[in-house]
Amino acid sequence: GQQVMQIPQYQHVQEGEDFTTYCNSSTTLSNIQWYKQRPGGHPVFLIQLVKSGEVKKQKRLTFQFGEAKKNSSLHITATQTTDVGTYFCAGWEDYKLSFGAGTTVTVRA
Amino acid sequence: DGGITQSPKYLFRKEGQNVTLSCEQNLNHDAMYWYRQDPGQGLRLIYYSQIVNDFQKGDIAEGYSVSREKKESFPLTVTSAQKNPTAFYLCASSPSREGTGFSPLHFGNGTRLTVT
Image (cartoon, rainbow over all chains, first blue to last red; front, side, top):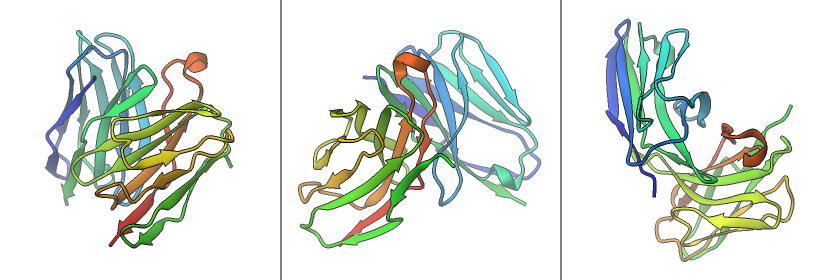
């Protein structure tokens, strides 16, 4: 079955710096979704990528889908304290959405 | 407002007891899901249902049971057979896969279950 892996597991960032989190799949993905979970909260959908090589931006967040559709990345520029939380990537396989283990982001002011 | 309601937010049980977690949605979504979240392990799928009166096992179904008698409701029972039941349980829903392709999941606020 499909396995989705994320690295790094933890990311400690100085406020104002940039960072990237990566998502890799053992199989070709039909699409990739990204979610954010704030501390104590529930996952909230951020974005979906479907096309090979697709790049989408949401303000300071840039999402990319690999050419082979087996990997994805999330790049955050000028990190702010509001970026704190865990970021998950997830891929659909049949009727199941499989999540990576997530990257937990903390920010030093 | 449309959404998913999970209750209660915190639940405490003694070992050996079955416990049922509630999940209700008023989004008119066909599909519903139960995930378990443990620290450092992301979200793992327990059960999912694409339509009323039908459901399938996810990746970690052992020790759990579900029912889908109504479109709005998808309760999860954690049985005494589940060896490590203490966890954060998340219910989610999405529109039918056939109708809308790859839909995002809408999550409830979760139930934190502690079994001692």
